[in-house]
Length: 194
Image (spheres, rainbow, N blue to C red):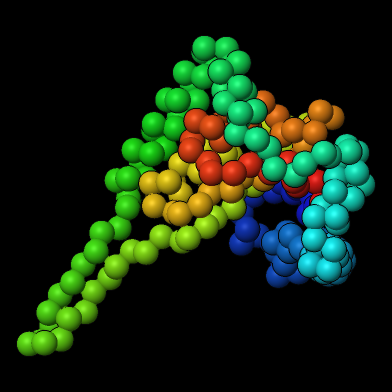
């Protein structure tokens, strides 16, 4: 269900309108509608059945029998402590750089009295809760956790929840758990295969 990767070398102006349309049309056809239908069915089932549906999806998509959806904080801390020092140092450095870059971009409050008694302005107001998805499976990206959690922390988000697919042991990868601990996530769930 992915669009084909196309490579074209040459001047776009040399293409016929039809050839240009085909080159630029990256839609996977009716796959989008099929995906949307399937996603709506999954969401409806979660709304109807709650956690029971999530446990079933873990069996179906991740091929693992979960005992719990939420990962205890002690597991994240243990994952962080078990990292080789060079990997941990790299994550710490990345988190620090991400925080620094986002702090520099943080909007500030502005108030201007445009006329006597008339004040207009801008007030940044962080979200109360955000979710950060970290891919799992064949490719694991602790950087996804850092790039989602750290900016949310800098922005002042109230609660940050990380979700990542469980491995055979029922837990997200150690790298994802370690990054969640380091970045300051509030909760981690072994979810994501659907």
